Length: 228
Image 1: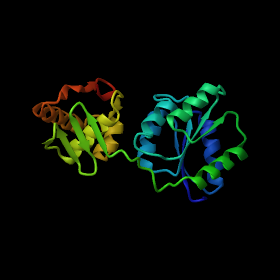
Image 2: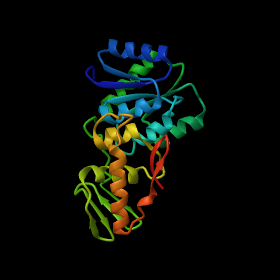
Image 3: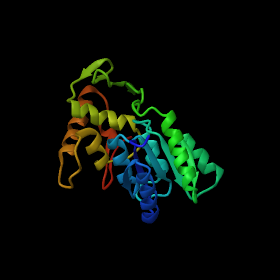
């Protein structure tokens, strides 16, 4: 267990450092994040064995982060919050958290919960079993990397397929550019980089040509992209 890697997502700097120092003292490898957007990007690219996740975070709250994470990964998560209301705990479990701690918490209890969760989790099996998405005549098959409209193949590049898959898999949610650059382009986001815009434009055009409304892939100015 001592070699396990843990991501601590907590906006209280003092508490984040306190928890991180505690875990490092137990031999864990620890990365820190102080807001929800950075935490999400770290969580989906870092392949951690466990994530300690605060609920009240700037930029993206813990429930939203967890909901996004659970669409692609099953990394064990312990939610940490100052709220003790039962409905908050229920919401956390509905979103897919594995355990829950309310502040203030006993550090010994935190360590025991981490150890117990790591023992019963399988860090090797982090991917979900979603292999196919169907939406209004459009079918995406991930293992074969195929996009079909009414059984007719749409010629997409691997990047175009990955972009369309991400948007369909998160229908109704705004995906920010840093998230898409990491998951689709496999690189960090640059403010002057327009490559993602180019790929999205080509995907829209190909969907229109196939008879599917490409304009449903919407640009949300200043935020990212969304499938309506």
